[in-house]
Image 1 (spheres, rainbow over the protein chains, first blue to last red):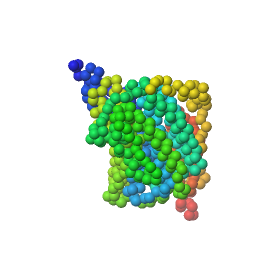
Image 2: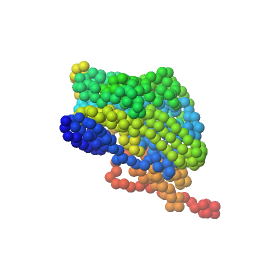
Image 3: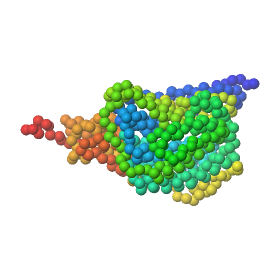
Image 4: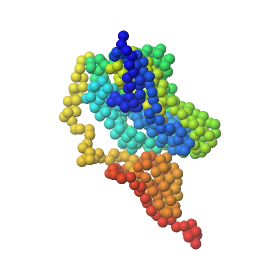
Amino acid sequence: MGKKTIIPFGPQHPVLPEPLHLDLVVEDEKVVEAVPQIGFVHRGLEKLTETHDYNQFIYIAERICGICAFGHSMGYAETIESLMHVEIPPRAQYLRVILHELSRMHSHILWLGLAADAFGYESLFMHCWRLRERILDIFEMTTGGRVILSAVVVGGMVRDISNEMLADVRTRVQSIHDEYQQICNTFLNDSSVQSRLVGVGVIEHDDAVSLGMVGPFARASNVNNDVRSLGNGGYGQLSDFQPTLDSGCDCYARVKVRLQEVSQSARIIDEMISHIPDGDISVKVKGSPEAGAQAANTLEQPRGECYYYALGNGTKYLDRMRMRTPTSQNLAGMAQALAGCDLADVNMIVLTIDPCISCTER
Amino acid sequence: MGCFKLAHMTLHSLFSHPDTVCYPAQTKPVPSGLKGHIVNDVSTCIMCGICAKTCPSGALTVDRKAGTWTINRFRCVQCGSCVRACPKGSLSMDPNYQKPSRHMYDDVVTKSIPDSKDAKA
């Protein structure tokens, strides 16, 4: 039995793209306990509802996180539309789903690259990010931005995407997906990848439920909690949606779920482009939310369920805008997965929850 | 199972055209849907200041008395709110890349607006 030592991990660490600090209590090479600490990038964005009206705040909402920027602007806009009883045109709903699923593809492929980098597979990392660039090119072609799209307004979309351009998007997504199959094959079947992932950071189904885990982290423990199943907005038009689940409960299962979700997103984009109706892309929203009016909304972000809440006060400024992000739900699960693991596996386990501390702290 | 699963893709990349460009010697062609930057057609601008009120980042300042319309390009987030709000259609987005600047400065557009008293006289 060795002596217990505390090793600080982060907030600046080569494997972590996010400022998360962990106090790792280790005994020999085993982690006994992990104590997470956040608070390094708090920006007070929710407070800005006092100085920015509900139309201006959408550009702040999408700056909460660089990766799920589109999702945050969509989730916020849907909340305000629900607060003000606004029905957006069907074409705008379809366009939002297409761009949101492209965001999910870009987020997951980015994460897969980071995971490959974390276990030392540099060429796989490069190929993942090369494919991700092509999705950013689609964003640039359709919305004019690569990361921050500013494509959503309260009441619909800023600009339409022509049917010819949508056909081009479909071709591009198909070509990305064809190349992506080789990356999938490497992640799923390469022995060097499996040796770092299989049996690492196991969280059983019951623990995942009791810890309130969300997103691919929970779905890899066979927890069926994909918000897209509820059919909110454009997701209600999908012919069939089955969440991607896996019962492996380890890091390998989490990689597998994300790999399959990229293919699922490509299928959703294909179906949405096939059935997109013609028509307007926005409705004029006038007036202000009523005093005391409340609205809540959930959206499946790439990392899991994100919850939005808004409270109106009769003016153009909201009384309260609150978001609960997936990473804050998953930190407890991460701490449990770290307890008892090898010190060398810490970076892999932390990465498999795909932590977004910028989202969590806002 | 097995290793070298990525060999085919890696070899293909070795002999194919690179995805990156040698910036700044080469620049990427401007994509068709690029947002670009804000341009003000001063001939139709009435200096009403609606654009400045709409701007979420406070990048625009309009001084009707001095007849100046000022944009701080380093604060502008290219959301296009001002373009959509402009009642005269004076503002537009120029879909081209700009060279990076070494200094922070404001772009000022000047126009003499006739005083309302003078206009009545």
